[in-house]
Image (cartoon, rainbow, N blue to C red):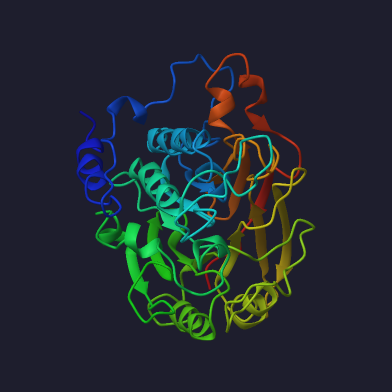
Length: 376
């Protein structure tokens, strides 16, 4: 039995929704299908390490037929831990399509009904089960999106997120989770959290995840944290749900009822631009059938480059499609301590020799190189 499997089995049994249990994780799901790939993912340099980015899962979780695709993705990610030297997996939020509906909208896959055919409890239970593949494998990091709050779309700040993703759920968070602040209801949660990693070539890395449209006090907390004596010399990656639109512009406003709230421009001006050590912002949220990835580079107050990256394939197969064709983003942090190679891969397409030729996107929007500034 895999040394990663037993803790995952135990964890999966503990994170079930009330009155609903998860099926046990099967060992074979930690290994990708036995396909002789012509071009499998591999590191350019054996001393690199990787991060895996999952875009918004909501279009996988809202349809029962799509949910196995997201579970294939998380199972594939678990299997790459050694091959790609993966430190962790990040998810851009919108884990579900509706946070708290007792019924469904009766949507039909491919035939309309964009809002799906699953109740909120079914959606949360299924996305939780998919992340069971990563429990005790990675200290994965989740942002929360607008659909993770309110009834359907951020009508308020209530979320079922903390019922399914508690700090006690994944033992590996004990090793990496270094700070949290309370959510809008005043309770401790992982909605705003910071995780620390170390690498001999990159030094200390801090990944900070924020709630959707973060409140003023959350931005103040994050600013104090990354400038504190403990973390001021860390390189910082910010994970937040909504920041760039599909044109690459920083989002200025949004029609959501939650208030007070800060959108992309406010997050940039109040947190990212003044900071000395945020070098990369990763977001999701935006997307359409033609666009799943945009990026741009801005300068912070010190004149250093800050790279902004939106990745969200949820609509690339159509709003009523399969949820995103299984696309995920691979980030290879090379051993020079400054170069990050971004690539875009679909383990769904790679699972068959018939479709393996389509498993990479090589155009400039989906394969590119970033140079991160040194730690201050």
